[in-house]
Length: 130
Image 1 (cartoon, rainbow, N blue to C red):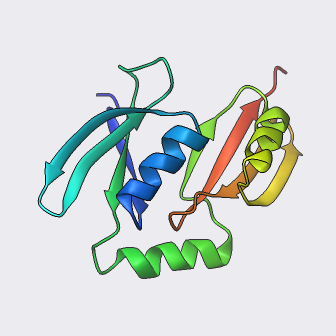
Image 2 (image 1 turned 90 degrees about the vertical axis):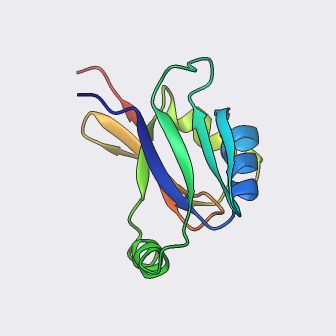
C-alpha cells in the first residue's frame, strides 16, 4: 500500500491553484470538472508521478470549523519537505507569503509555517544530517 493522493481543504480552487503552482512551484496534474468544483491535483515540480495533492473544496459542513480551529491554534494542516528552509522562507517572503513561524531549528530539523491564503497553515521542514 502506498499514498497516491492526499488533500488540503481550500476555500477557492482557482486561487489555490495559482498559489500552489505560481508561488509554491507545484505543477498541475489533473483538472477535471465535477459540477461546480473540480478534481484538481498538483504534484512536486518535475515529479509528475509523485504523490498528488488534491486541492479539495472545503464545502463539507465540518470543514470550516475544523480549519478555523487549526488556524486559531496555529496547527499546520500539512507539511512539505524542503532542502533549505531559510532560502525558501526568504523566497516566499519576497513573494508576499505570510509566515506565522519563521525558520526554527528543532534538533535535527528546521521548520517554518506559512498561511497558504486558502484557509490553511502549511509547515515546511528541512531535515539535517546527523
